[in-house]
Length: 126
Image 1 (tube, rainbow, N blue to C red):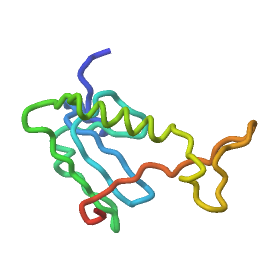
Image 2: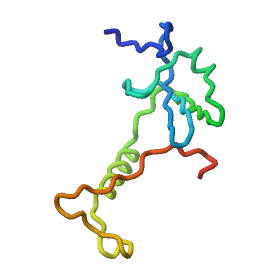
Image 3: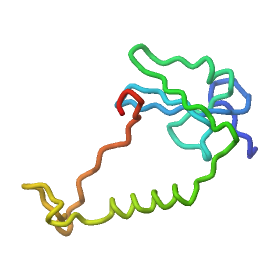
Image 4: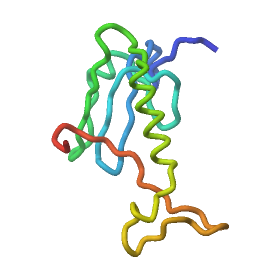
C-alpha cells in the first residue's frame, strides 16, 4: 500500500492535502489540514476538490487553515493541559461539587450516562 493518501472523490487520483469532516448535529462541514491518520467517516481531498467544496443549503463550511510553518508539535504546556483535563474529567465529583438531586456515583452494574458528542465551535459561539 502506498504511503501517499489519495483524494476520496471518485475517479480522482491526486494526492490528498485536506480532510473533510461533517458535524451533522450542527449542520457544519469542517475542512482542515490532512489528518495524521485516515479516519472512518472523514474524507481526504486534493487541493482542487478542497477549494471547490460547497455545502448543502443551510449548512456552514468551516475552513481551518494549515499551520504556516508545517506540522506543529505539541508543546509541554499543551500536553500538561491535556493531562490535567483528563484527570479532572476522570475525578469522581465530591458531594460539595454535586448538583442537588443528582447522584454523585454510579451504582455497580449500571453504566454511567453517555456524555454529549463533540460539536464544532465557531467564533460566533464564543
